[in-house]
Length: 225
Ligand code: SAH
Image 1 (cartoon, rainbow, N blue to C red):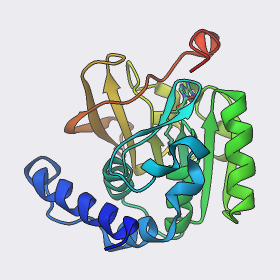
Image 2: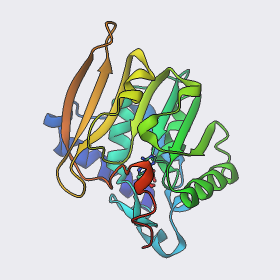
Image 3: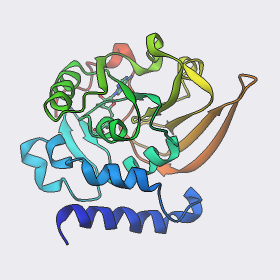
Image 4: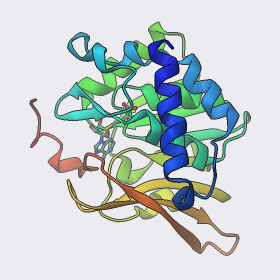
């Protein structure tokens, strides 16, 4: 087995171990095909490339991480995408999750609060030919109203609460996949569906651990690393 095949089988094993929580034995084959196509090593700094096909998170600088492949696959599955969708991602980071989504949908908009990461991700995605991803620097709590409503929104940092602008920018019947909880503590991965009457329906999926979704004015405080 090569590294990528190892990673795919680790994802399948995790899916199997958590099948009672996530309510399925296997993930959408479109998602697994996308994972197979995107070279994760291209999204890591040179010093950490040796971790590219391990099923774990890895550092990308500025105290941030590229998410665990199993979690990327699970969240992509929970978004329930179609090839005609327009998706908003909050927390571009390395751009890896955005690259996976770019294989699954028509257009991806991605917001990253740390300018350096946003510039790097934009450059990387362009170089690798993911032309249907648009990255912008900004605070995801506010969403990106210009391209709304979205057919799905994915947040890849832990929010303290569900930001109302994201609900407003979601199409009726569409889903927001978001980890909600305390910074560096317990967080719950939630699937939030917007109903026709504007109400939301929340499903808790499983406990996760993400870096925090920071407020716009706090973004410079934890630079470094
Ligand atoms: N999806 C990323 C994982 C990123 S980690 C990947 O595939 O690599 C979470 C990212 O969210 C970090 O890059 C962090 O800078 C960013 N972030 C934190 N708070 C944010 C906010 N309020 N708005 C947008 N991005 C934010």
